[in-house]
Length: 187
Length: 338
Ligand SMILES: [Fe+2]
Ligand SMILES: [Fe+2]
Image 1 (cartoon, rainbow over the protein chains, first blue to last red):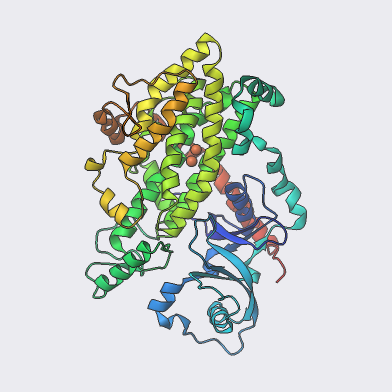
Image 2: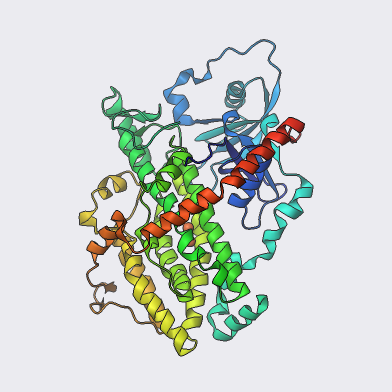
């Protein structure tokens, strides 16, 4: 009884408009649409999501600073002359704090390959104001994203489910009358 | 892709160092210095084989525990005493499914596929927390699991959020935020019962009597009988030992349980004025090992339920695949603009 070995998709979640997308983990899915739905179920059971992106993991370049240091040959590649220039989204991890996200969206770069995008990012220094421990390079054309009109059906329903949040149980909730009232609230 | 467990000294990933590597000692020193400095080890970073092995072992067992952990409570979704309780329980069980996925993701960053792990679980070859091999006999059991079992899990998981391996630490931070809801809804439900009718009070006490010791066993064997602990602590995979966590847990939960009028089922229990510790009586480790070896009350039933769920989900997976094929044939999926 083997499990499905559907491809892995990297998931990027944007909590609010005007906030960067953040790499939160991966899901397995047979296609991008299903990946988006799985990502919603796995990473957005509670509100605070405005947009979700998924991208096939095999189209995402992930590199650590240490990996690059121990293997300086990472940057070597022959880029075909006629390779088209594409847009790459750049995500970095620039701290060692305890968080639930791996990397944060910092900008875009025009390049012909993932590695060229990463080389440019390092050369330009635009994203390296602080040390970067982890890079993720995601081609824009590999991303499937939720749309503005999906917010209502994908993310909004979670907002009503206050009982999913620990704050719902705080304060006077352990007082017997308050408990009874809450029982009636839903029933 | 990759199989697990591997034979020792086969390199599972290019970034995993073997003791026979010429640069092993130097890399190890650098690795340990990074951990000492509080840096996270990320997928792709150099790591010693033993670190890799311990992480795969721990995270996969943890993932399986989340998945199997859905079963004792899931059995009560259709029998919840009110609509509100049903909504809360559904949300909790969904969370546990999500926790399993976060953790399978974390193991996959070490090159071991979810498919391989799930296969091992269904074959009965994988370990998971022994606590889920006890039956849920009444609604009070569901409530007591939330308070006691999730409470113990939070202690462990809060510690693991400090883990030196980035993906495991991040999964734990995400899980802990949700776990507090599990704990609080359980505490709320038991508080209600403990203040309720004589029968409800009896159910609450009975649930505590049966779940108390299994919950304490969740922290694992005593430190002196836990051969993995020194390596795990040295590399900050764990930052506190089993006994330390267990003591912290009993110190916190005993006064809370007593406050709602429940009695701790331990005749040897006493409070040590000097240290401020609650000292518990001996744990029945023979029972613990029996359950781990598959002889608990519910081991067979849990695996049968998991296999049945997997088999009954087969048509869904097939349907989803058929949909994906047809969809792809018809139109290219929508892309966001660059
Ligand atoms: Fe959980
Ligand atoms: Fe939980």
